[in-house]
Image (cartoon, rainbow, N blue to C red; front, side):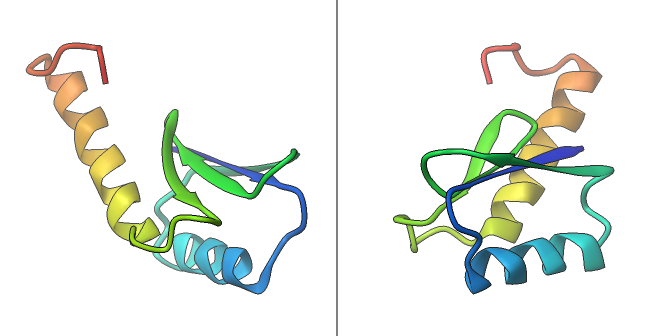
Length: 80
């Protein structure tokens, strides 16, 4: 799984999320981009945005991983 970190200013909250992703070995690569807002994307799914505090980023990564595995099995349309 490739995780993209798009940032304007890297915050302590973003660093903590990235540490958790690295500790649990959820990503094969973490790529950093300079952008207009702070967002974390995993396999083309937005898992975290600075303005959205309701989502747990690790749960969103697990969801992205499950969707990718189901796609590989051929049971889910490629719309996701």
